[in-house]
Length: 423
Image (cartoon, rainbow, N blue to C red; front, side, top):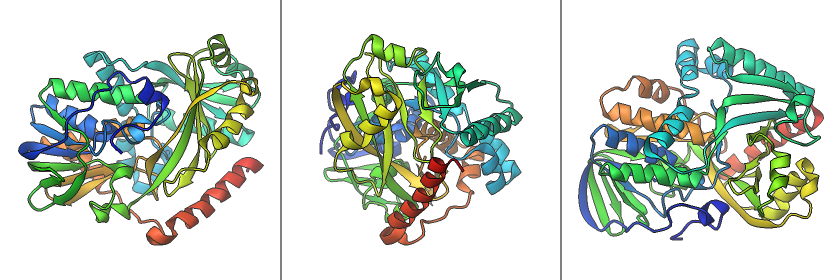
């Protein structure tokens, strides 16, 4: 594949022209593998610090999850801050908790600094389908308040009406520092900002090997000789560095986009916040700039696509918005994100000069920007934040590559049943 998948985002992207592939031998301070959010965020940080940087992208900038996701700016991680502190210790928990909003802040700062046109909108709403989930949201507020965060607003059922018009939810929680964006336009805008500072991106340049001892990255037609290498391919690194593959599992999630709905979209989502529910396998949705409903949900462990994305996601949307039963569906697509066993991102080194970051586990819009900055800091000489993440324990999926999918499916089924039963 040499182009983006046929998604709403690809059809409405600001930049459509492809960059040339790498040919011949070139040198740089840092070679970044992968032009998604992590790689592009890190590359831009490095360029701002005066490093020479080359980015290698197998297909197009934002081809993977970075250009296909729900576009939701959700602060924090896939595990709550108290769980992180209990698992990794109070010292690490405090530092990680203090960084929970930095990724979102980076996005807003860059949109303003570089004039990136990506339909940035404020506000994120988490919705509860049961009273148990509502109590979990109340607990979430208390935990985040203990870290000094005060941008939440709890809502009862009546309080949801200014934000989402549906009978499905019993309450919710507004995060005023959340929001949503056109993700492909964001990552493309960051890539152009990087290039404006002298950085170089080669598209359609899949990496075929990495000489970790000498920091040399080879493609079919060229090579990059660097002082450092960043591996930022996440779920789209295939058979290049097998030692990373056991750490993560690709998981696909699906999205559909309706036709432009005009006033109906505004009626259903009056305040234009993005929404995700509190189920283990959650639904997420929002309005687009041209007043479509973008609705996502469902997962397939192992990264394969369902037989019909439309048939999988449309019933979910109609549960939430029955009035859309006659709406035309203009786009359906899926994309893979990288899941870790702990549902927490991983950073580390494969060799003294080869760094990696992956496994954002469904919270990648914000955590990728945070971790991209931390990667750049490490090369610039400040490893304090990198060391905290790199020293966290990692665990492989039980069953290896053969049995990790069925075992994970069994675990997910258990939590989905708890959601349905409200326990």
